[in-house]
Length: 289
Image 1 (spheres, rainbow, N blue to C red):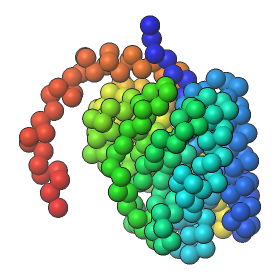
Image 2 (cartoon, helix red, strand yellow):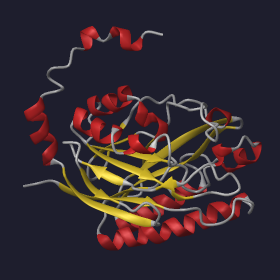
Image 3 (cartoon, rainbow, N blue to C red):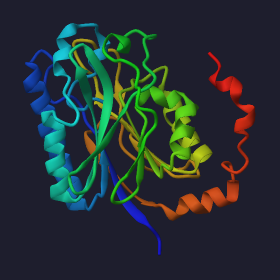
Image 4 (cartoon, rainbow, N blue to C red):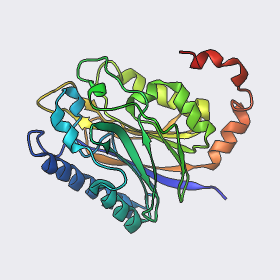
């Protein structure tokens, strides 16, 4: 009997101008996302992920201490608490990417994972923090992740998380596979231009190299006043062969849904045997300073 899991991705534009109060911004984006969660619930989605820092604009386009006040505790902040209620209501696993406050002055780009009964399973903190392109000043806001590459045993599948810029680094993608991930979600905020040709290249390659499914999420639209470029959407699922099986539009707020057959993981891995043929004894140079 096949193990088919219905999964969803939410891609949206900003719900209000960024000069509104931080609470208005958070609530407006939550309200928009909650509508898509309701839609996903009616569609029978079992695992659902939102885009990177979904309650806020991509504020890394500037360096402004104002945005520190938008960070929340995980799991004790209001957004995670709300998502726990939604998960329980719909019997749905939720991957919830938000700006996390650990203690005052220490902040992370994180994602909480909530099981289908509403219980909090844990969080992933983004490891690779860019600070190299105009409009991507992330080191001003985030410390590098320090929780490793956890895989969460949810009600429906073993789920891993990688966040945005992480996707350019194959080492963590492999670590998630070795840790047992069946589906890896990569919530992102990336604009047209330099990264766009990589969007449909790197993550399907990770899926094929590691024999798991990937759900890649990108926001849509432009965000004034920064206007660093067009967030080009095109959120998608890729299967263990590296084939894109469901994809969103470039410029629309929408829910992307796919039925993922977890039995395909065994089928593909038994053909390619990449895990059997690894040579970790020869990879020492990969972790040299």
